Length: 301
Image 1 (cartoon, one colour):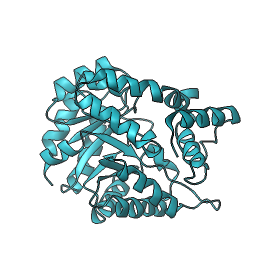
Image 2 (cartoon, helix red, strand yellow; image 1 turned 90 degrees about the vertical axis):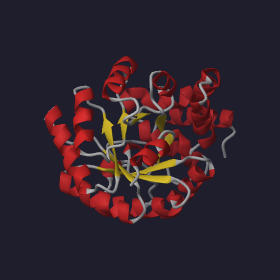
Image 3 (cartoon, rainbow, N blue to C red; image 1 turned 30 degrees about the vertical axis):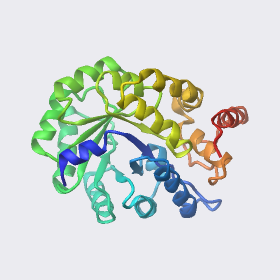
Image 4 (cartoon, helix red, strand yellow; image 1 turned 45 degrees about the horizontal axis):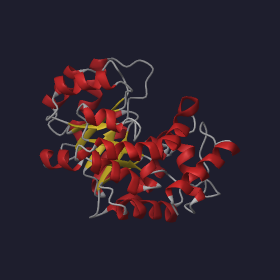
């Protein structure tokens, strides 16, 4: 593992693959293969399997591994495979090793699932996972405002394979402070709240952003990233205007439809069922109509 090389490769659109299901509620491998092909054909350089848009917390251990198998095969030699892991430390490490053995170069560690999370415990949780897989890059997924610059520094001091941070807090000012104090060059900072926040975060130090939309219209996501990397905020904001309604539909009702809007859009362009697992639900009919109207403006098929 070359940390500098990984940091460079992660400074881009970090797509999150959905997990399509069949009518029998099994992972739809052929559709997932088509989604991955759509991403890599669309110049997406990092593909994340088992992220939140992939309904990570609703998948069985076997299903998580099935998703890794499919995405790894489709991304091989064409995109960096980033695998989401989480739950208890032993499960996270087992899943990380499985993904590594199938070609993953890095793992994204989901926020700990626990009602009582201390900042010190957060560092120890990630340290244990990172130390167990020193040949993988580590990308903590941060949604906890209690995690500050010193915690990132402490973790990276203990584990040099911590190469990036997916920062998913809706506060650009706080992010600017954290990134500067922890080290703008020490980590690749990835804006973790998709296209609507990407320009603001890029302006204060983020080098890439996550995207669920990329599975539907990869040209929009990569176009925005190209513009941001070139400092062309006017062009980036034109894309922002184009995707705003779609992303607002995902954010509505406290993000209740975050995944289901993506899967409905994929369904409408012929990529699988719109089925999502509880506690998510299919969007209301009027939302489905609005999704269709947005897809028409994009000219997506």
